[in-house]
Image 1 (cartoon, one colour):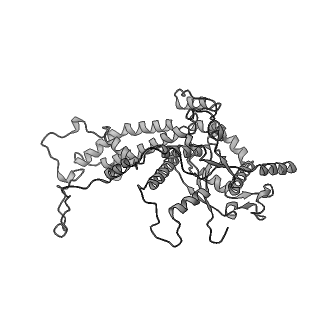
Image 2 (image 1 turned 180 degrees about the vertical axis):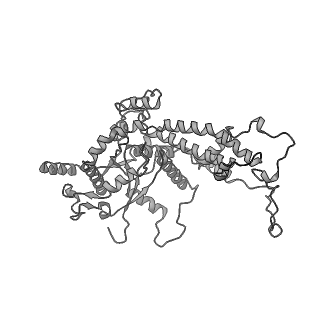
Image 3 (image 1 turned 120 degrees about the vertical axis):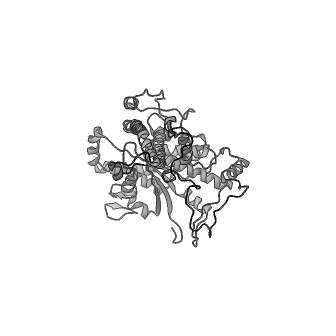
Length: 446
């Protein structure tokens, strides 16, 4: 690589493992076993990149830079990838300008140059659950519309229309009764005291003919273009599928102990993944072998786990694999089955909505001055109605995001696939010579 050339840059995705509170577990696996390589005497192909140290930063030595994309909840990666695809489509159609840096720098690459560099790099996916979320996001982004969707605004409108915060007829004041302006919970402009600078700065008045809103303009621009999803997809960076599992729960303590004393298997998988990335050898992503691409499957034992934990009858799904690279680490779904969040979400939602009416009555009584605050309320002031609405929005946004994410990664649901992916997606693989050489080294050591 020349002194003026930039290193290859890859993007690392590690989705949250269901049931694990540590959302950085997959990313730490990458940093510990893929970013660096251990025992180069076993993996002789790294001798040219490493010295005599036990741990070698092979990606740095191979001039490969990486960008880690963090996610905190189930489904975050799917939404992030879908949003990125929609932004790419909008830029290509001229709806949005190409993203630029706020501070212009010399020799700054253009948008097209950045896209070329992305294609020369790659995408690292840690674990099967990350592959599920990533392909689901790709399919959603390339199959949906071009509109920018604000999830919080849509959910806020939906929650405002469901009547949870509507007052009962008994709680409303009689006709003609006006509360004191000092206890008005939501002051209006007519009840606010005049500002001292009202003479110097008169209030702004809206024009008689307001301009068209941004949403209307954007809708008209999108309608004038072809909003249908494209029939062919542009080139995509190659994917590196890194094996990763996470043992969570008391039942897997023996597996944790065994894994602690046998980390050589993780080291080997990380070194093989790093070598495949460094070598740059790729092949076409092998899609499903059948035309029924969205039907599910269940590995042995996963159906019983789901039925016993979720308390519902498992849907009828196909028990045979999908085929191709969609069966990557298919057996690991048994480890995910016991960690369904639906039961916890149902209990949390039931507990929250059972206490919400009492909290809402308290907030309205204090706002209207119908009673004084108790000693306990003086120490810990209760939430106002506005705060309760905001709290409910955040809780529902979190619960629905987790439910959506679980529907993507849960056992029994196949990986999302689109026939347009065939021939576009590539996968890094290790050459045959590497596998033969490592087998000879293992035989010599054994």
